Amino acid sequence: MYSLETLLAMCDDSIRSLGYDREPQLLYYPIKYTLDAGGKRLRPVILLSVCDMFGGEVTSAMPAAMAVEVFHNFTLLHDDIMDNAPTRRGRPTVHKRWNSNVAILSGDAMVISSYDILSQAPADKLPRLLYDFTLLGKGVCEGQLYDMEFEKRGADVTLDEYIEMIRLKTAVLIAGAARMGAVLGGADEEACRRIYRFGTDFGLAFQIQDDLLDTYGDPDTFGKEIGGDIAEGKKTFLLITAYNALDEEGRRRLDAELASDLDRGEKLVRVRAIYDSVGVRESAGRAIKHYYDKAMEMLDTIDRPEESKSALRELAEKLIKRMN
Image (cartoon, rainbow, N blue to C red):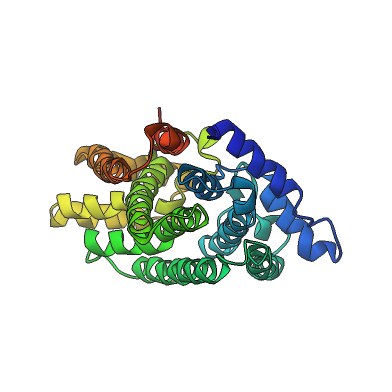
């Protein structure tokens, strides 16, 4: 069994060897810039750790892991344009350092590259991997569209709608990576179904935690400037929960703060005070625990030795405690 530390090191080594040091530099250097910025490597490590858990050969799973990581980073390039985000992982976003056209084109090249990398996976597993990879890609696009549509709506966006949006935008990529790891590890269909459910619930917990960090986190450890969701009018778990808890007057006050011309920092302080008045932070914490516990319970049902699950458990626990 591989340790979490070893899997992370293997991912970083593989990313450095992907070969984006080539011409034209204006197309490929932004890709290298993005991948070299670090990050949690959550999705490729989940894929590799699940493969290892089922007794598969981790090195043969690396192309699929890299394909998932490159695809994920493509989504960040385009998300940052749509959100007008100034920083990512403590550095200027690609569209800020270069321009939006470069970010769009480099992102497009990353999608194509991700399929090229995936083609290097074991031939006997490739048809199923391509199916899962395409499915997760479509889900991410669907979720992003819902996210954009919700920005135009008011307090009528429900928590159920939000959960479905983040299931598509965030959780399907994590769940899809987990299922691809299971396929590469030789798991049967029932085990693949269970690990997908683990990934889905963990992905929901992870995204709600991300919402929480964007409002209450430390920018030095979060990796990007906080308050972006509030500045962009994102319908997050926190905002929807606040709408549900406030009376009509309170909702009007919250809407007024969100629509104000205050600078980002002052707007964050004022909206956060409203959140605090109705216990939004605590509600988010309960939701995170709910989905995290469901994920761990599903992992418990998978018939593999407990020691084979240690890297996956360690990664999940580490990420879900990012505010501590």
